[in-house]
Image (tube, rainbow, N blue to C red; front, side, top):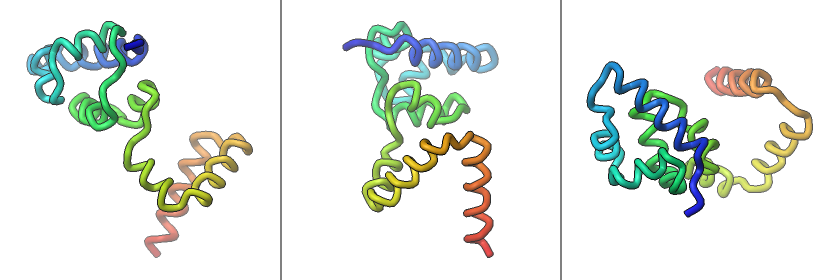
Length: 123
């Protein structure tokens, strides 16, 4: 296993910050809540092992109160839900993503498009 020090450092940082106010965020207890071994989590946090599955990263984000997509990106993973969405409409989704990328849409511009779509679909 190659490891991912950036991901491991971020998980440790988030977990330790939570542990300051909640003792259930010890390495052992957090690993148990995620459903992985404490040894594995320790090696992930030290950058010795690759990050866990996307499902476990999503669970970590939920427990840590942070954005799952950011942790998934840091881990080099994609939410399985997004894989399914792309598979349902591969050509349209690929074209949309490429267009957004080619036109260098900012995060704010993408958020505005999302708000418009949600608003238009609610009417």
